Length: 105
Image (cartoon, rainbow, N blue to C red; front, top):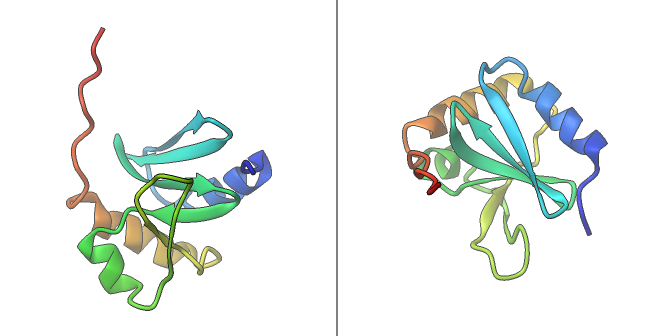
């Protein structure tokens, strides 16, 4: 199952207090970036983020879910209605996220 464009747009609206949020479509799903770093994505109309320490601390009871078969588990963000929480979450995660890889030409 793939994600709907409407759900992606909803998540992007919820993240709209952050500058430099971008996304890329990938096989029916959407990878979400903050200031060039991957924070997570929209998979099967679920907002999942990378399981970095700050995200685990901010959501200690969150479920870990697979974005797709064969992938590493990610944290399911249940409270997507709280814009302030989402802003704080993404900002807290930023320093822990790996820098983007250089693409070969």
